[in-house]
Length: 60
Picture 1: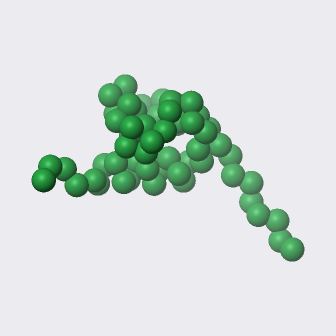
Picture 2: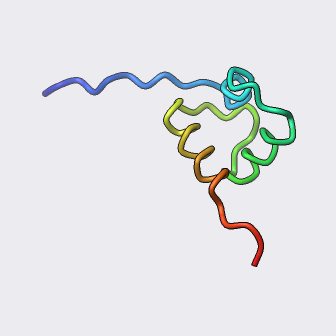
Picture 3: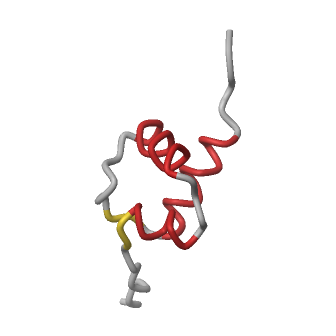
């Protein structure tokens, strides 16, 4: 049986720091995704949550 590639997990706050996020955007992303700042996620999970956050419907 082939081995699954290992996924590296990082704290959300670390990934946001690497992406040079302002504090408000990190707080909003965490709230939108239901995460805390110390949640461990993969880069793919972070990117998907960020994409969803930045493309969410605004207003009514």
